[in-house]
Amino acid sequence: MGTARQIVVSVSGLTKAYGATSVLKGVDFSVDRGEVHALLGGNGAGKSTMIRIITGSAAKDAGDIVFHSPSGELRTEAEGRRKIAVVHQELALLPHLTVAENIALPYFANGAALFNRKRAAGQAYDALAMIDREFAATSLQRLIGDLSLHEGQMVEIARALASGAELILLDEPTANLTAQETDRLFTVLRRLTRESGLSVVFVSHRMKEIRQIANVCTIIRDGRTVVDRAATASLTDADIIEKMGQTATAHVSERAAVPTRRALDGEPLIIKENGFRLELRPGTILGVAGAPAGPSTLIATLVGAARSRRWTVSHASWPDSFSSPRQAARLGSGFITGDRSHKGILHSLPIIDNVLASRRVVRGSKVTGVHEQTECLDLMQALKVKAASIWNLPNTLSGGTQQKLLLARWLGLPSRLLVLEEPTRGVDIGTKREIYHLIRQMAASGTVIVWWSTENAELLEVCDRVMAFDTEGRCAGVIENEDLSEDRLAELTGMAA
Image (cartoon, rainbow, N blue to C red; front, top):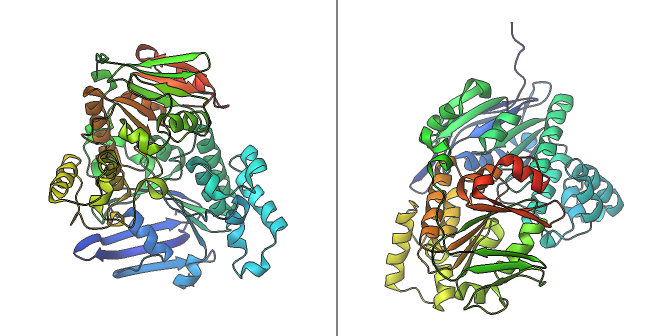
């Protein structure tokens, strides 16, 4: 006879609608104590909505949620939710507080008067050191608002680990982590599930990571459970993709089928740093690999946000350096941030204003005309963005669909350069393929693409060449198309593939 299940939380018949849009249509889901459970589904399937309902940040329309204590006794929903920590796809940190204060806050739930800074620093260090000891030693007193998205992700995960929760819900937790940081996180999670009975719900679109960490999976499709608690090893990647409602061929690399593209004629962009010089002809797709220190400095220069002159970018019709992101955009240098929540999406403005934001900067326009409504609808149709109305707020869309809005801003604009920072962060496999196709189309029209990704396999598939940065943020070399491989990238970046 098998061992009796020790359930932490079980959900049955969960439904949720926003107006006329039905998001959850009877979802069933349960998590056992001490397991890492992959929650899978395409963008808009209902995963994040279910997580918000379980944690109490959204109300259910119907269905049951039952929480269990370690002894098997039933808990009230309020008691059960106090034992949950969640890392959302979009970070939920307080920018005006320090790293230590953000991590330690769960320990001090009774009010600021009880806050002990020395104790908080110790607890924050212990939690953060599990992921990155050097970062923990140097960053406890830094303000969250001064951190990169990559650093904020580590703080958010450390806060969840430090909370004493029995169940941690991780929504795309590795989207902004390096391979080494991801490996360290997985090591910590395995130890905690084994030694303390911690339960983990892991939401990701990265199949390799799902297989590394999760022993059981549930798949949601169109608001319904289509696979309930299957052993991850019992399903192939093609099985999972098919159950998610996407085509099996979407997971197959196109790289072998894509011939090396010829650069187009025209004035090149020239990137320089000290003795390093790189010429980028129109139509080039340049990948950028490595830990954030190097890529972020280069990107800041390319989009007019640099605080130093370490890098320079030149073109016949450009000044020696951009004075601001506005000037860069008007001269043809576009940017799509990987931090769509804090730096990309305009949450208080409707979809149409989000889609047309870059056009208004480039054109200097402010008023929405009838032609803009048509333009917005055409862009949304080109990107297969479905929304009830262009006047709805973007938070009515899934995270992957919001990412498409950022792409729509630059689609069709006469850009000489488009800089992409983790453009496929948190999107499903089908949407990734659509983004790859769009980027290739932009390059074919003559735009130079600079693409930073922490997924080496993605760079290999999309890019003509890759600039690699080492762990100290220095440029370690440029790998040309014929020499691109995960082993070569790992060698130059000092990071596992």
